[in-house]
Length: 339
Ligand SMILES: Nc1nc2c(ncn2[C@@H]2O[C@H](COP(=O)(O)OP(=O)(O)OP(=O)(O)O)[C@@H](O)[C@H]2O)c(=O)[nH]1
Ligand SMILES: [Mg+2]
Image (tube, rainbow, N blue to C red):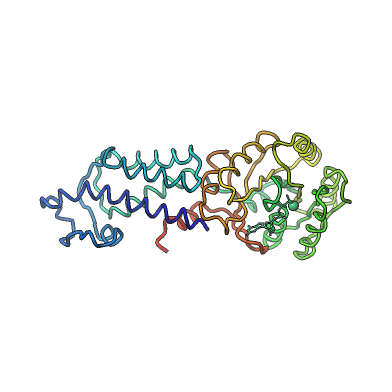
């Protein structure tokens, strides 16, 4: 997951570190920094070798021009990873504010300083995530969750995965087979429901999806079920009639949560589409699927900051338990950690 972005961030980390080191190194030669290791910084040594042992115990001012090249590299690397422009600006701006101009005593290695700064900058744009179990616990039951998005992004699979996830947490769940449009869609969700042992409410193909999902909610009320998961047909946000149908579903089933599902691999397209869905039918939280196939990580990094909605889960494969509650700290660790 996100290997390409990880690689680029590691390169940026090294590059920023080198720039800071370049500021620090000349004074070392003049013997002004007794805290520095006596060992010279051989150009053949790797960056990590150099900075991890390079503990600066004195004051240092990093200027704009010293970091300009490294920050511009960081900017390009983020954009190449499909990180949205506004998010790239936010990250680069954060790093710059954090490092430039401060008259600081760095009682740590340059690398630790850089990693700490990158970590804060990423955490700042990643938002807090969304704890679905906690949400359900603190809301009136049944909690009604509507899944929307464009075709083939993984909505139905995500409904099944979330169903299995919630069941494991001890919640009772019913699925509404709200994709009455695509041939084979009802059978598909029916097979999933059977496999994970969750009740499903379905009508025939071609039926009004609002009616199916209304029935699913009624079933949940009369059987005291905790959660209704509503699958829907994939649709493009540009198709007004299909968006109107979704709007009708929303009016009829009155979801507590609208989940926008898209593929992490779609990068910036996912962000544009999420914003469009949010504008027309609303979106409260986002799930990004196929993170296991996404090397660039741009959508995962950008979506919460750009559309202002938390990322709830990442889909990480085709099996039912290939779903990860989105944890900003875990993602940052994956991107910046040494493992
Ligand atoms: N690798 C991987 N594949 C996934 C993931 N989520 C879904 N898929 C696959 O993506 C394909 C489409 O998934 P569906 O759940 O049918 O997508 P959908 O959005 O319901 O599609 P429509 O109903 O046609 O709009 C299937 O082959 C899934 O197995 C994931 O997280 N990782
Ligand atoms: Mg589907």
